[in-house]
Image 1: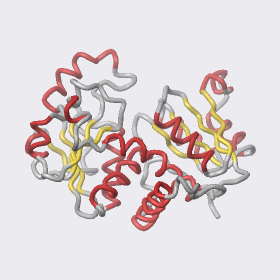
Image 2: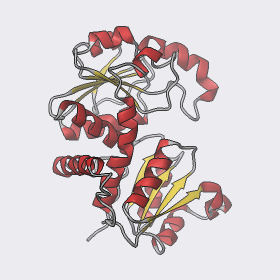
Image 3: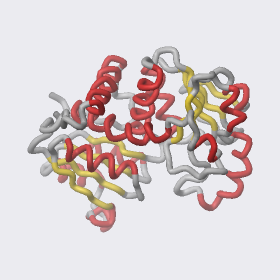
Length: 293
């Protein structure tokens, strides 16, 4: 069977995505009984981190171990990449030792090159352009709260970044209407989602409101300008009141209460943020089963 990668999320069709989310729910419900233990017995998975990480690193390392495989943590400065070895050659070599590679990188192009060189599945654990593993957790969270994904309306407010892009791609596959509300200059490219420059109009009747930090890694030099431009797009109580009565609040974390989201929304009774964070583990375990087992 030809190897499969998970780089943008577009690799999954509707049936595969539905099955993956159903399996993730099974893994979550059966975790105490060690559901899935042994699925990857005897396998080894490299987790390559060029950037700092909390949720991605911990959820992948724990998930790989719970499936019975050995996780191998590799930092960029620990590999010969730091001395000029090509990304493609690194993929070729790692493939001779490992059964899969998950990589969190500051370059999307490098992950694509790694996948082209590798003979084992490569998983995008975050790049500046895409964060598909986060989107899987987002969809699992929505599925838990609403019972279905078909026809849900999810409104992302703020910077049209990698999180918004992956939500739009995988949301479209799942039958979710994704709206991305951003100020001029911060919008997602046309064609992936419905776009808006009016967060209040976009939030009307939404089933979920979603946001992310305003200053990501690499944006520090423009931090003050970004905060000023994005301030009208804060996820706050007033915006949440415009959404459906059943609406939930989402954030991929880490959060900065008082900036992109208020403390009251982040920690309030309508927040599903902590379920969303936990669901990284279960969605990624289901993904690993699909690609490796």
